[in-house]
Image (cartoon, rainbow, N blue to C red):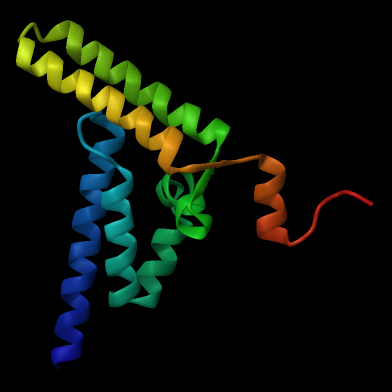
Length: 139
């Protein structure tokens, strides 16, 4: 009985973090990846079925699959994520005229670029294919 209750709590927490991570896709101030990683952790602990479902979603594949598998992203993925987040941060900074908020946005902007450039390894698409399929197209 305790195990079933524990698994239920893990599954509920997984869905909560999927929801928060989904908001992070839209809201530039809210990070996406950490919440989706937490969701993945809780689904793994709670249920194989829910974990398999989560791993098959576009949210997982687009935002954390490469990161989970080999702690890296392709340059295209990095640019796509940074472009959207940067445009939202810049828009927020133009809309809100409060100086401390603008300073906070600038800090977030710099932090995001630092993290993506220096903390997440960039791989080529060919390296990604080799990692997944164990072979290249070379003869």
